[in-house]
Image (cartoon, rainbow, N blue to C red; front, side):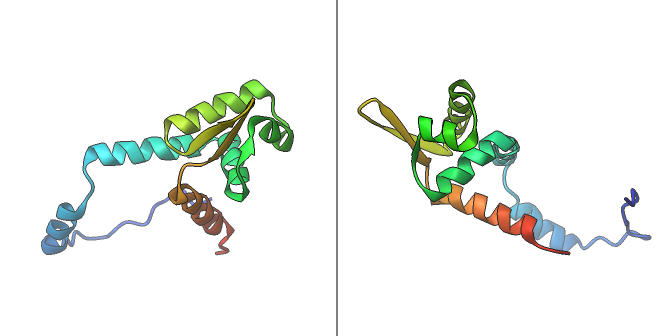
Length: 120
């Protein structure tokens, strides 16, 4: 793998462009929150859960079976996903069903899968 990063050979700064871009940049707090979101998405167990939930809402027992994970492991990951508003749940009798929090989460998963599927 080439470790060198291509760089400019001379300084050429477009001040007008940079001024425009500075005005449109997200604030630091928003970027920090986005960074935290990507950290949450950076765990394969959580991505497996999110991927499964893009298809259908599932109870914890179904997630355990589908993903071959222990109840404690599934619950731990669901807790993290819920804390970051990626999943929500509903209770029905003794069962707890999880689903994606909103369409944005499904879009994140779909766009990520599309990106990794691109050939270069």
